[in-house]
Amino acid sequence: MNYENSDGASVYVDYNSYDPYNKDGRYKQNFILKKYTDGWKIVKVENISIDQW
Amino acid sequence: MIGKVIGNYKITEFIEEGGMGTIYKGTHIKLERTVAVKKLHQNLTSNPQFKERFLNEAKILAKLSHPNIINIYDFLEDEEQFYIVAEFVEGKPLDYMISNNMLSSTEQKIQLFKQILKGIGYAHISGVVHRDIKPSNVMIQNDEAAKILDFGIAKLSDSSRSLTKTGTKMGSLYYMSPEQVLGKNLDERTDIYSLGILFFEMLTNRLPYNTQTESDFELMNSIVSQEMPDINNLVSGLAPNLGNVIKKACAKDLSERFSTCEEFSAALDAMGFTFTETNTDFGKTQFITPDGGKNVSQKTVFVQPSQNTDDASMQTNQKSKKNGILIVSGFLIMVMIGFLIYVLTSNDIDSELNSRSEENSTEKSAGTNSKTSSNSSTNSSTDNTTTYSSEYSSSAALETARSFISDLGNRNFSSAYGKQRNKGWGSFDVFSSTKSFGGITSTNINEAL
Image (tube, rainbow over all chains, first blue to last red; front, top):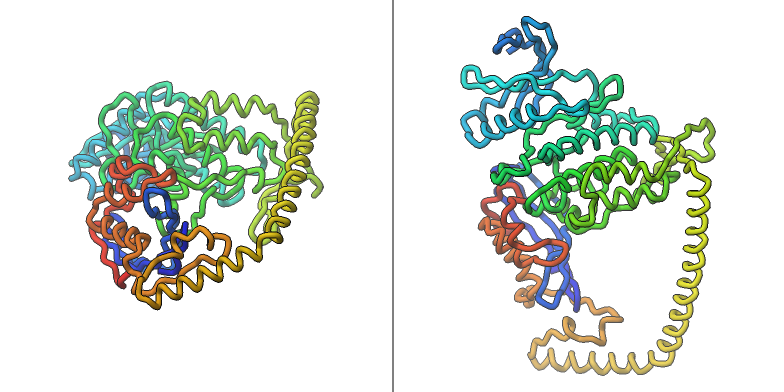
């Protein structure tokens, strides 16, 4: 978690994705989230690094 | 393949490798007519869905006859290979012309674009939606006639079958409409959107959204939710309404777009442009670039022809200026009042915050672990950011991110997007019908979120 406040948050994510139609890859991203009345939503994805193979 | 005879056609030259097939130049043996021969990729012939799509392309094209649409001459099957024989177009693809700054004036761009509108408009009247409009699918002949190619993924409007739900990305993402990205049903207005993006690119030499990303996810999000930049802020000297015309064509909401190509074309006609080229620097259009305009790629000037239009425009501008002055004055007064209130009350807020802070530290030291930073209304005007350490891993925001990745890995798009439902992301039922992420079959989180 990068930060969280009353109406927004930023979460650092690091995951591998296995995608037969494109390329497999390791994605490091920041998910920017916003708090709505019915919960948190991801509103933006910032790429930090993408290694595809 | 070169020299091979298929039906009445002799293959003479390789042209290019396309998304669905290889394109060759050929000659009709008896008529000596030059043709383009498209051969379906060998690795696709075993797939009945691709074969069907290939057949579909031939049938659709055969129904269309228009000067701005490539003509189809024949459809052939030979040694379990499929071929479409079509009109051979001498010219250059529009994407090549855009990237090489070969479109010299705004007038030329609009004239070419209106030909494209005519061709697609005709296809729409014939019940065909192209669904893959992009510059590389438009050839500009040497006589400046535009020819639209590749109706390969087009779908007859009255067809109940959907041929794009194959889990692969159809069309070029940059030109995809929000409803295509969301996997909704498409109609002619999808083409109107793509035409708007194509026109935007023709006029600005760039695409409206960030193309430097490697993430389809991010680009799709922009298409669905990000406001399109105003072309008039990117290119100076364009008629002010041109930006509005493009914005209307590219409205996120289908119902706000032009409903036909004729309407789109009429909106351009209604602006009544005349175009003049100038040899002086004064008055030329300068493309605004990130380097502050040092790399000026194209220069044109736009002139509105009608004096009446100018007068009306000036009156509107004067009215807008007056309104603007009133708004600015009102804003300044509000800022001053706000400042006075702040000065008068700041001591009280400070003391309140101090007392809250003391309360929080007391609670934490007592082991209550309460998350006042997320819910407190008083700290929103101050630094209300809390950095979470692993002890807060149960945060709802973290849980959202974690479950989103997890759902993607399980191919549970319905669930992944359902949890992200808001105006920008669309609803889960439409997201679930499109494999927006290509074919992700699994994901694993490398580090604990």
